[in-house]
Image (cartoon, rainbow, N blue to C red):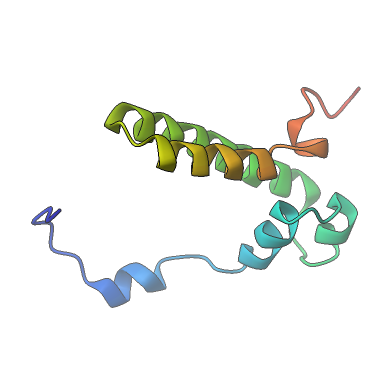
Amino acid sequence: VESKVVVNEEEYVQGFKKELMEVVFAWSNGASFASICKMTDVYEGSLIRLFSRLEELLRQVAQAAKVMGSEELEQKFEIALGKVRRDIVAAQSLYL
């Protein structure tokens, strides 16, 4: 679908912060929180916040897919959500 929004593709791609992609990939493939913390200098709390925001984004796009009537796409986002929402990221409080 053409949106008629003019976007410079090169600038758009350069705007992505790729530093944590490997960390997110490792986490979603079952790596422990301790092991992903060793992969980066980012504070642990910032990683938790990153995963919480990613979790919320995945929930929203899954809901959007449902509204659009794409059950297959909704299921893919739900699977991704399950891979992100686990262990310490899924904890209600870090102070339990």
